[in-house]
Amino acid sequence: MCKSRHNCKIIKEDQLFCSWTKDTYFSIYKNLEIMKKLILLLVVAFVGLTAHAQAKIEFKTETIDYGKIAKGSDGVRVFEFTNTGDAPLVIEDVKSTCGCTVPKKPKGAIAPGASSSIEVKYDTKRVGPIRKTVTVYSNASEPVKALKIKGEVLAGDKSVMEKTK
Figure (cartoon, rainbow, N blue to C red):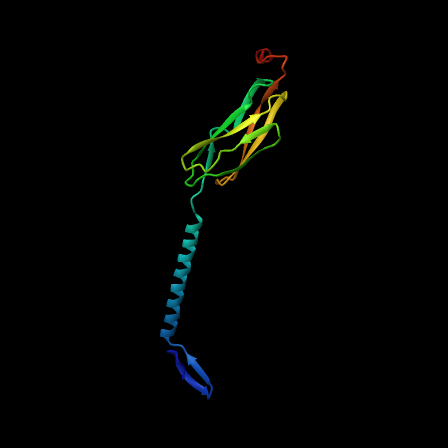
């Protein structure tokens, strides 16, 4: 005897033939509807969990122009930024394109809405044009950010005022 709610008939001693009734089809349809809703709920929950809080870094300026500076003058400049995201910002690393430019990253995390800075020191004993890139690596929505410094270091025998005339 069949244990389901189907109309079953014995064909042979060990074989059953079950015909489904309208109730059976309705039951299967209801189960499918429940499964669809469950899958939809799981998809919505997954999307909700992946759309989590994220840090966002915004610099006041992405390029600093040293202008024309004298050889041996102060080569320190500062890139100021704000975490405009809704999660703490961590500056993981700051690298320059050569050894003549030394960046200094902030220590610790920067809270949402807080500001900080990246200090960059250029070796002004090198005479000539300045065209360098400082790359910032962080946990922000844009994880790699390129900052630029430019300008010109003038030779020691000429002053900045003489060179600009």
